[in-house]
Every structure is written in C-alpha cells, then in structure tokens.
Length: 214
Image (spheres, helix red, strand yellow):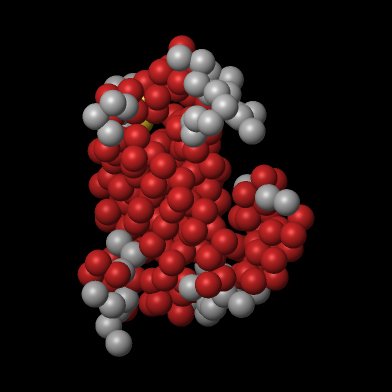
C-alpha cells in the first residue's frame, strides 16, 4: 500500500525548515527547528516499534516547547534558542521547582538530533543490501547511549539488530523508488544544514554553561 504524502518522511521538509531556523549569525529560531524535528521524528515512527523508546520521548519534549510558543505569555521569550536561555537564566527559572525548563527540554532534543544525524549520515554511505542495524547501534553508542540508563541501552541495542537493510528501510519511510532517489539526492545538503543548526545550539549551551542541566 502506498504511503500518503503526510505519512511519508520528507527530507525536503527537514532541509527547508532547518535553513529557515537559522537566525542572525549564531541563533536558531525555535518554531522552524520544531517543524524539522516533527519530520525527523516521523522517520522513527515509520521505522516501527523498534524506535518507540526514542520517538515517544522526543514527541513529549516537542510538545512542551510548542506549548511555550503557543502561549501569549511566553511566546516572545521562546522565539529563539538564545532568547529562551537568557529568559530562563535571568528569571532564575532553570532550577525552579515545579517549572518545566525549555532549555532543559531542548537539551534532550539536541542530544537526539546528534543521534539522528549520525545515523542518517551512516545510512547514506551504505550499499542497498547492507544492514542498517550495526550503523544504528554505532551511532546510538556514540550519542544517546551516554545519557540513557543501562536497561534502556540494552533494550535499544538488541532491538536495533531487527532493522532491515538500507533499501528496505528507505522504501518503508520514503515510499517509491523515485521518492527514495530524491531523498538520497537531497540528504547531503540536509546533513549540512542539520550540522549548522546542531553546532549553533551546542555553542549556545556552552556559552550559557547549560550542558549539564539535569
């Protein structure tokens, strides 16, 4: 059965939204960032239950930030990543009891993005009949695994061995052979845009000394 457009993973949406997210020389506009992330999370949803542990957690974090953006009281303070960090720092909100910190929430998405881009970069280098499980596990071990407890790590690593080969995985998430071809053509540019966004946000976490938020 063919996938509807709104069900397919569309790299062009990721690419366009991440480019739109670039704000000034060193900042990231949060709404466009979340638009890209919504599409990236669709990738995991389409792969199936093997990534349920990732997609459900990421979706809950996106919802928190979307609520800040939708609220008349907070939307302006959360327009960009820098504004959000400064607002929460200056208002002493980062460690306030009962307050859900946007900076802490984004940090979880930021770590997830590191995993996503590492995995997609490795998939791009595979041959069609190469299994995607080993490169997924390698990407996970180098990124998200560092922040997950032992039980989650073991479960994720075992589940990754059930992933299909590159050709099967891409058809499952992108659709037809033509759509897979288009995705592979735009992937290098998308990875470049993803890297710029990731590095800008990483630099802001360093600048405001927020990498260690619990």
